[in-house]
Image 1 (cartoon, rainbow, N blue to C red):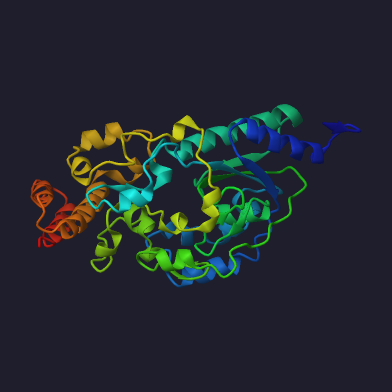
Image 2 (image 1 turned 60 degrees about the vertical axis):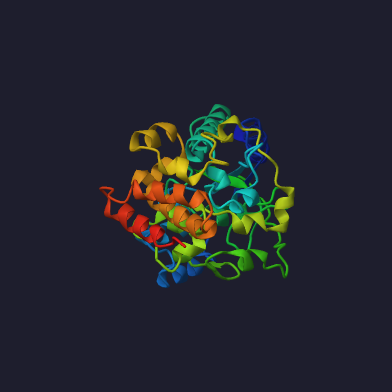
Length: 360
């Protein structure tokens, strides 16, 4: 590892990529800290207000695009990806076609990825420390204002798709990203070219038309934002478009041609829990707050809290009620909603009242 008493950083970079695979990552790359090209785009996006309630994105300002400001001394960033598509899960297309079922984004069906990635990245940092001695670093997994996609692009892991997610020719987009900011002068990787061409399937399929143009996302219309990040009332005009999506949305990934190469994860932590790949809206809506907290312990879903969980399910039930018409299942939906009509939360009551207006 050492050359003339000094670290051989080229060899170290190769070792880091090997160690990352041993720790369960499918790929790792190394990026420099120059995100100056991305900074004007970020500032323009914030100026438009497309970040919605996510005030932290504006609050951190240019720290997002200047790694050495966020973590002083940073010279290079190790970016790693980990596949998350759970093996054996019911296909999202099938769930979306069953309005009485709850559609949950594939990434949230198992254990909270923040916990999984952070632990693995820490172990990777420990391996580096064993090889080179003490160095300064910081691990990030959505835990601070880090531009994961931009850094992964610079690290040669993929390119930004028109839906704004990272795409990889061998793996599509069903993967998580994590980073280690380091003060090590590691050799950096080459970026990949863009391979979306004239395809615009992700733009056309978006239920709420949140992808307003290639590479431009108005988060305020995005179902993932509305069901996860947004804390208040979901705009009435967008509720019918949400369908049965109660936590996140995979539509833009589902239609992407590159995801024909996506592979199921062999990581047990990402296996389906609580039958969330095929659970009924009524079943989930009947959970008590204790049920929610106990069953979703260790899940990313638990972060939104019980109130927003019921809000999202009420919207799903209202849309299911419209789709069901006067079929026998409609009465069961009405009964489930009525049981929450006097809920202590005004937010829940509002969305339940809206749902009940969908009775045909």
